[in-house]
Image (cartoon, rainbow, N blue to C red; front, side, top):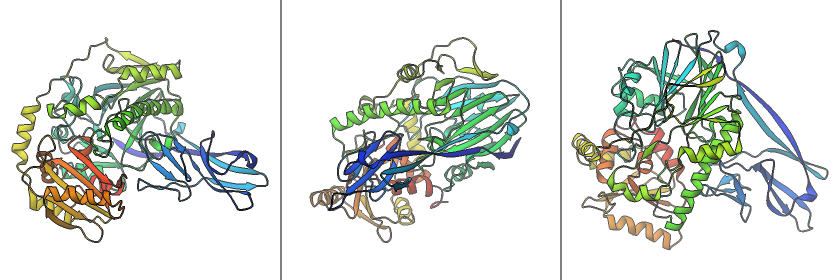
Amino acid sequence: MLERVGRLTRSEDRRTVRVSLSCLRDGLQTHPDGFLVLAVSDDAGALEVRRVVPSACAHASGTLVPTAGGRARCANHGWELDVERCAYTNVQRSVRELDWVAEGDELVVSVPRSARSLEDGLRPRKNVPVEVRYLAHACVALEAGGLRIVVDPWLVGPCFLGGWWHAHAVPSDALTTLLGADAVFISHNHPDHLHEETLARLPRETLMLVPDFPSGSVARALRSLGFTRVQALGEDEVFAVGDVLRLACLFAGDGRDDSGLYVAGAAADILLTVDANRLGGMALPADIDLLLTSFASGASGFPVCFDVVSTARCEAIVNRNRHAARDAAASYVRATRARAWMPYAGYFTEADPRDASVRAQNAKNSPDDVADALKARFPGLQTISPLVYPRVAVVEHQVEVRGEASTPADATHSVGAWRASTRAAVGSLDEPRLEAFLRGAGFRDDLVLLIVATDDAFVPGVRPAWCVDFRDAAVVQRIAAADAFARLAEARAAERTSPRFLLLRAREDVLAHVVARDRPWEELTIGFQCRVDRYPDVYNSAFWEHFTNILPGRVHG
């Protein structure tokens, strides 16, 4: 059924931008062609160009704006770039400088432009309609010529350990649709995409398609669940699905384990961006007939679960995130020259009563918010609500609505019953297992991790806390919860930036689940199941990458 037939063609060219040196000033400045220039005056007043870097932030499609001291900051999430060092100050990431040269009285910058395309010779020859059926959240079923591929099925219960619940009722035949799939594609290992309770309904011999990330995070997770046919899709590799479809996986452009899916028929081009940031580095297939993107924002524990963020700053960040989500959708429409757009990967809610404060703070875009913004920017764009028209088909590069308009039903949430059954299945927190896990993590960094088990309201209980020093070996100490808070407070009062401190107050029942089931640790933050404090206030990306994508499935088998 699945056969590798080639690769997407990646075309790259460079646009030369010439800037008069007389237009530059001492310091960091933004050029409208998408880059930052750092220029420094010598003692004689002569201006020297030191660095030229892209002005796009490496995260979430934001824009870096010059601040002071040769630094630029992204308003979306506060990532700050030290342009001289080509490295972020508060995130463990670096950037590559653009090619440039000073020629006479001009700065000449080579700005890369790239795109992806499917060669005509790789398209399927059999021309049939390609139907897209929205099922729930990020789950859609793709059907053509009697073949069916289901993407990212989360169809039962909550995800993120009870932090996310469906905002609308899942169709009664959704599981039947999943069980009839010829293959299932999982874009990444977050549980709203790789949902164990839903996948438990599938036969273990189901063909599972996954992105071929270097970490192996998705493939390893599925194999640990017993799936025996796991096919990794390399980035840009084109696979034939019978004689009616071609698939190609694109990876997120921010370096995280995330991906999207390009689907092509003889006369159909569909792109599912899932919730990847800057998919494919924004080098995307053009003239897409149907584009599906996320829309909501709010799919992160930052800022609402971070003690280091004040209430006023939290509100400002939430509002910026909503704007950023709208801008990201617009960037995808512009890059793909999409004819039609459908919002998905955002239909969730914080239904657990213990998360009421999160729900109140974590304002999200509605699909209509984003649709209205897109139509204002792209007047010819067709926007389709999957809640009203869950079935569409691409026929001869035109999107047709299938079936009658529907009215979405609100989901019902059995929060208490689910939580009780999960606690019974998982049991209490296994302290020796947690300590063995941390000692065997194989992680080294200038970081001290403090873990405090709490009740539902994040108040410490009777259990000890843990201090894990990752500087040389993972030295794990049991300490009192008060001591954990004191160690962070001492570092903050002394303004001591090395080692960094990261304190997690995690609900005990959820921490027990993570430990017992070897879950990715990012589920604690994205699922609003912990409160985070840290000093200095930097994103410890290496820690979260290791404990989310590298480690799960390795320490305990």
